[in-house]
Length: 425
Ligand SMILES: C[S@@+](CC[C@H](N)C(=O)[O-])C[C@H]1O[C@@H](n2cnc3c(N)ncnc32)[C@H](O)[C@@H]1O
Image (cartoon, rainbow, N blue to C red; front, side, top):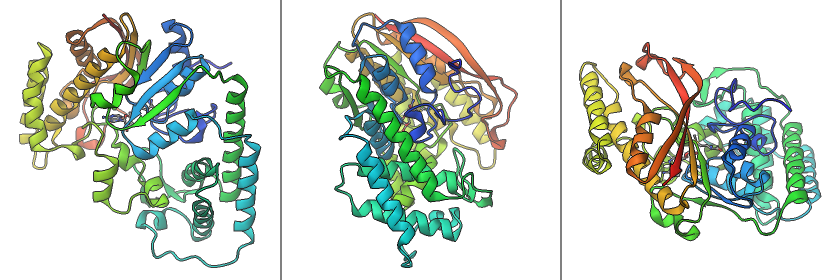
């Protein structure tokens, strides 16, 4: 057994090889072996309920299931919420049926010689693959879409979506897809890679069928975890623990980061649709998401959070000044208040659903836009103590150096990812 690593060495995202994590690589904050280790250390009651307000691809959920717990999570990104729900849903039958369906589709695609119409494809799709690969991918997609009522349809869809980055001939690493920058595809043959991915999914499903207990429940709700109504179905004071990784300040635009999959599948056809349908429930963590009005309201709302409000407003003032010193400065000063108000609302919702004494672990990094140090984990912990939690531990998981910041924000501040352990009073 290898050492759990919290994803060390994997710059962004889940493990490429661990069961369930390997279904699709998403910037997850941690890998499932680390989530398992943490859940184990928290010593939750047997068959407890674990929650995650930033469910993402469901790493906490699958680790909770492995540890014999139930899970409830909220995720804003519709496509990623679908993935997490799929991983955590009850399998629809013997995965032999999935393998058979995938082989049938692959065979049809290999033997159909008809040409395909590319006129409806997004620019990003057209530029990301060589023409032969693209033809095969589209035939696979059309074939899967055609069988939308097939019981294994969503699993086939995800095996194909995860194949896209494997076979792209341009740089498609996280967080930005760069269709202008060529690369050698990691895998040459889309059909065999798709089948490989289906095999992994089938193997992982088999592994849960062997251990699954009927008394446990797993649920992923697509929506905004700031909204109390998205937590209503689990009731008050019933959850036994929380393990989560919030978006880091100015890290990813999670909608943009999944543009390739969204455009390819046809969920989204324009940037405005991306903003209105994919991003709408997400908290503000990047300058692309800000607005003057939201930032002004947030500055006022921060007053609710005791001494931490003025600290955040003071940082926003410093950032506003830095922006003023630049010709086309970025609006970090608008991100900050909105981000922390959102975190405050989510902590309030957690305080409602967690039982007294329940632990909450947040894995989150600090940041230093324009060299102004923002101690995100420390500020979150301070807010939490105003909202019914006690801080038990705040430890560095790994140092990040300056690797995560772009040229525009280069600075000399050492950054770290930290693990913050809170306990519900
Ligand atoms: C660091 S990722 C967490 C990934 C997760 N640990 C996993 O297993 O993939 C943060 C997630 O929070 C989601 N998110 C952002 N704002 C949200 C909100 N208001 N409500 C629910 N989810 C949100 C993002 O879409 C993203 O998937």
